[in-house]
Image: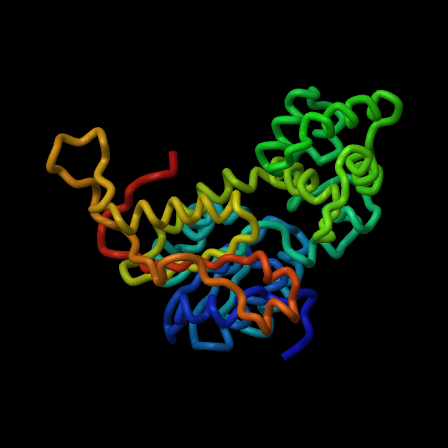
Amino acid sequence: MTDHPHISVLLDEVLDVLKPASGEVIVDGTFGAGGYSRAILEASDCKVYGIDRDPRAIAMGRVMEKEFPGRLQVLEGCYADMQALLAKVGVSAVDGIALDIGVSSMQIDEAERGFSFMRDGPLDMRMSADGPTAADVVNSESEAELARIIFHYGEERRSRAIAKVLVAQRQEKPFSTTLELADAVATVVRPTGKGINPATRTFQALRIFVNDELGQLDQGLAAAEKLLAPGGRLAVVSFHSLEDRRVKKFLTERSSARANPSRHLPPGEDGPAPSFKLVKRGAIKAREVEASQNPRSRSARLRGAVRTEAPVWGDVA
């Protein structure tokens, strides 16, 4: 096997949830550097559709397609739109879906993408080449809106103080690089004893906001429910509580419907039949060996579920 830009987190565990078999159709909704796709293709004689909105990931995928002729097809777009993307290639149902939520280490390692507060680069943070950049947000949003974004998406308690500093500094000189932003945040957020960079939560918040990551996740989960055939498996890896809470809520509701009837129904009537069955109660975490070798895996949480024959519940509210 050739070397790759990053290590796929919880790879063995994801394969164990998906259980790819010969003749199946599997979707890697967050293709990235192709780690999950490669492992799935090597595990069985199946067909994989890789989806990514990052032009660089697509370029890497085109090269990888030649290694697996007729078995790997990479589609450019967001995994939230996977139902429409797959429909264009004649696919209406699949046997497995893998999602690795958030920014990839490949993107973080490229300073010019603007995701890292450790390497100086343009303040961009877009996973695709479209839409406003993080610099646009920092330099144009009101102080109140910046505080809301940083608090809501970064869970940063010092959000108001950070927003105040950003607005004051941008009046003298607009922010254009990652280190300019990191240095500004560091003036009001003290380093913790755990070695977490003061700018971590602010960068997370801006990245999530710029890429609408939580909205994409909600739409992606709803699309997975529609696409998976009965018995189809879903594996979702997330890296922080905002993502994991959404995945947990979605799967818990849809796997235990009988225990949680709608308050809008008359007494004695249950809600819709469960559309998923959990692979395991709770999240699957990285084993000690992986956590020691790949620091990114320490915060990873994998949740898996199997699609039942019940009708789709519908889109996430």
